[in-house]
Structure formats: structure tokens, C-alpha cells
Image (cartoon, rainbow, N blue to C red):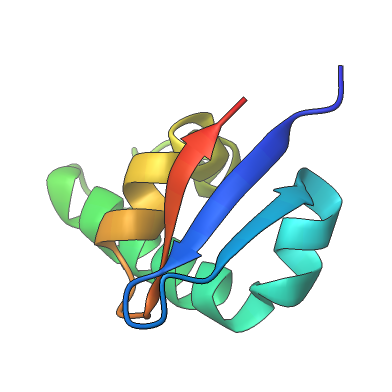
Length: 84
């Protein structure tokens, strides 16, 4: 299954249709910012001492809800309109 991501620019209304690998390559900086913000947000939720904390794979959790995380955890003119 090859998913397509429809991404739009808020200012110019330019629209791109990209596969996930193309999206990751073109928006590498924005994804990194959003992923770092996601990791920080999720880490603050866990109040357990360091020796008890589980070793979460935040990246898989981030991509599980990619549209919301990308659109809300980074400051960019681009946003994901739809993933199909």
C-alpha cells in the first residue's frame, strides 16, 4: 500500500501530493522539529524515576498520528491536509 500525503502551504495555497518517503525527504527539518517537540511533550507526561521509565519508541508513536503531530508540533507554512 502506497499512501499519498496531501500537503498545503498556508500562505501560497500551493499543494503537493507526496509519498511518505518523499514527504520525509522534503520536510526533514519540519519533521525533526515536530518529533523533538513530541518527545519533550511525552517525556513530561511520565513522572516515574529514571530507573523505572520504559524506553519508549517516540518515533513510531509520532508517525502513528502523523497528521496531527506534524500540523500542531512545528511552526511551518506547510500543513498536512489529508493522508490517503
